[in-house]
Length: 107
Length: 226
Image (cartoon, rainbow over all chains, first blue to last red):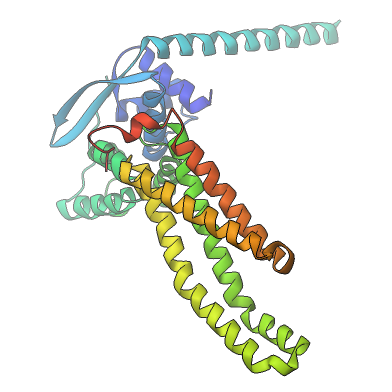
């Protein structure tokens, strides 16, 4: 799973979001490192919808502009959980080995 | 929930910027534009800087990249078999174009080579090559147009397109068989190889279009999104 996809799914894990909300949330989650642009966001959202990982929750018209809210599907939640567990496992292993190396180097 | 706020743009700045974004969004496939243009515009306008009147280079590149990606993806409801077949038909059109350009570019060389070999028949050779080139100039664009039309019809799930593809494939097969029976493989191996290559592409396209997975796409009452 690409980082942008992971971050978009993570943004939707806490509830429904519209496009601008996802962009802002992804910037927050990544500490400002990942700045999604609209073209990238909507290409990803279209793919995630086609794969059944997200769906449209509702649409609103605010200030004459269309706002569409997205939410995770149960499949999307499962995929995100599996990916998060995989990344967590890799990160844990990396940190454990680094700590061993550091401890070994210090000794 | 983060609420988007459009930056303080004058109405002329806002209109100019929106026009710029709308122009960029026209590069997306029509089905995608129908579903998403207004929503993407809302996000783009919310992300605009104060006083901005034109899309930034970064945003423009990102939208064009997104448009290219969307065009390389099946439209909603379109089976992957149909999507692959459509690209094969476009590849066949491109191959036909390559053949036509090669023939036109090498015309004088071929003529000179033949005349050097058979100087006694110079006039007849010149005439024959001219006739062949004229024929290629007329038939080539028609064949390319037919391939592109078949790709367009198939991508929209039109049953008539499927039937036309079958007929066109039959004609292509007959012309290949005729060329083989005339010994083209011996006298014009390069041209025959390209012809066989295009026939193979057509055969693959027809197998995909008549695949079980493709059939429901052509049997709907309403065609796919325009």
